[in-house]
Image (cartoon, rainbow, N blue to C red; front, side, top):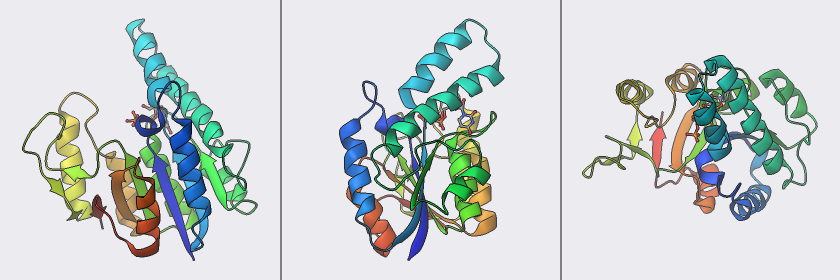
Length: 225
Ligand code: UTP
């Protein structure tokens, strides 16, 4: 039996407003994995967060408040995701401590952001570290880590496996350029490294792949270890 955290990127569940079919399929598949003792799901803010943040930023709103707005968006999405699970929290925890407490009562614990200054990538790494999960699956809209942003550079190549050190180097290089092209934030990779949490970066819309990873480590994405 394993403990796992999945980071469900806002970009993959966002639709108009959410891709409820994808969320329902994801939840059904997670509920059918016998090998799963506990699962933490951290949900991103997606279009909801972006719509508020971009508009309010153009009015000069304080960045700390924009983060708070983003956190509220992630929690709204998290509550929507949790409502599909039959054995999950119906109140979204605001801290990792509270999330871990809820884990005593539920097999599935769903949460969003915690405090300003980071993204749900960091929340998912902290959650994994705290609940003793050695596996973190980051479901994103790109099917792995590439040598460069595949949406901008035609000959960018997917990296099947890499060390924490190389992942941190690549994330640092990509965060220098403008735009949100980093596959995972650097803090989350540092946390994974210090606690030996294996990170999988996958196309989060391929809902069968979560089980393949949990049951046997098989992936078409990138493994960071
Ligand atoms: P996301 O984790 O979805 O951010 O949180 P992201 O990585 O920018 O979005 P995707 O995954 O690529 O779509 C949305 C926003 O909420 C705030 C940040 O402003 C973040 O950009 N946030 C989130 C926090 O301030 N703290 C948190 O713990 C989580």
